[in-house]
Structure formats: C-alpha cells, structure tokens
Length: 300
Image (cartoon, rainbow, N blue to C red; front, top):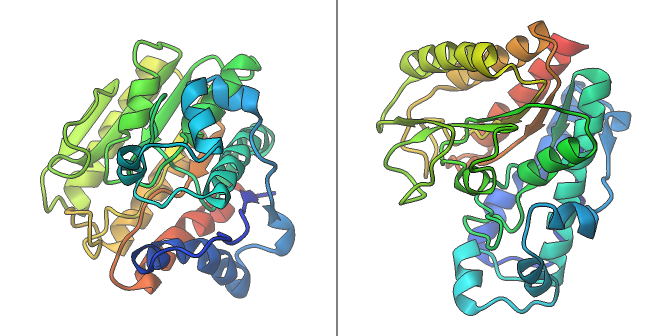
C-alpha cells in the first residue's frame, strides 16, 4: 500500500505572500482523493520527530532557539517565514513523517510525504523556507537504526540541496546528488558529492538525458540500498522562481524514470515533494499529483 505522510493545515495565519505556496499542501490530497488515485487509508498523520532524532543531525543550540522562539531577526529573515510555535511544531511533524516514510518504504518499496524536502536547512541554521532538514534527519535515522548501509539522495528540486550537502559533507555513507539551476538560489552553493548545475532555459531532452546517464552511473558506482528523492516541481517552465524550462510531460517523465529505476533495482525510495511556485496553482497540483499517480501505477 502507498503510505503518504500528511500534516494538518498550518494553524497560524501567514502573511499574504506566503499563503499561496502553502495552499498546495491542502489541495493536493483533495485532488488525489477526488480522482481516486488514493483513498483515505493511504494517508497517515505522522508523530513529531523526537529530540534524539533531530539532534542526531542539528545542533542543540539551534534547536533550542527554534523551540524557545529565540532566533535572531537575521536568522528569521534567512528562513523566510515568521517564526511561531505552530511553525516549529509543523516542521517537527514533517520530520516525523519522513522518518516514518523510511519504514514504509522498506516495507512497500516506496512512500511519500505531502510536505518535506526541506533541503536548505543546515546543521545550525535554516534558510529558504526550511527550518530543519527532513531528508537528513530521516537518512541519519536509517543509519543509526542500521536499516541502511549506503544512502543516495537524489535532489531534483530546481534549487541546490545546500543544507543536505553541508550536513553530509565527508560522510561516505550518504551520497548527495543535486541537479539544479546554475544561476538560481542559493548563491553561493555548497558542494554536493555530485552537482549538476543547469543553465537557464534547460528543457526536457537535455534534462532527462543528463538525469538518466548520471543516475545509472551512481547506482553502478555507489550501490545504494536506500534512496531519498526530492521531487520538486519548480523545474517547470511556468515556475516563477525556477528559470528552467521543463514541460509537465517532461517533469512526469523525470519522476517516472526515477521511480522505475528504483523499482527495477529493488531500492526502497522515500519521496519528499519539495518546491513549486508556478503562477497557476493548478499547474503545481498537476505536477505533484503526477508523482503520486506514478507511484501507484509502478508499485501497486
């Protein structure tokens, strides 16, 4: 069964500019239920990540400042959201969902988080709408529980997974692969184990050829036994922040290739949604929904 982590609605009113991108987290489950791709029992509300799990990745002083609402104004501006207890609670729930996703992926082959992909969070700070790094915390959980030996992070969000790269620098048990816009945020970038910076306007064919070639190479050379897939849809040509030029069909082909590759190689995969900022919310929902549709089609 496809298991999907779903966090309840963000409880604290956001400033006007933040409401639109957050809307997808409520609309996407409704669309998937409406069209019959999933049923209610596919969803689970995760429990919050434990202090122990978070502190295996993030510095204690930083977590304390988040939980006591004691971040500096500069640190809060870097994150991009107004800091509230509800925001921190939601972030811990997202982390908990990604941890639980790893267990479901080990059982069923694939699992998904409606949110997640908070790859701009570093060990000691947040930025880019990310407070804590769910992929890193979930990956460290797998390693600590000895449920994985070698993890591959496939980050296909249009923005480099700079926080994940920093957290796992000089950590051979986790290989970070980021395929992103060369001139896009963040600037400057961190160094992933493999970075593929793409020029503005990169379209479907070039993108997919590079992905297929490099993912095949990484499976052969790294031999991972677990994959985290950051499936941001801000690669679309319609995205306000993306600067690449993928079509909806190209984005769907990307996800199909990654999921089929994982299935054919019997590598469990946990999927986080990542970014998406197209002008029309319908474009964002359709692109994200394709990822869930493909998971059902390929695995179940």
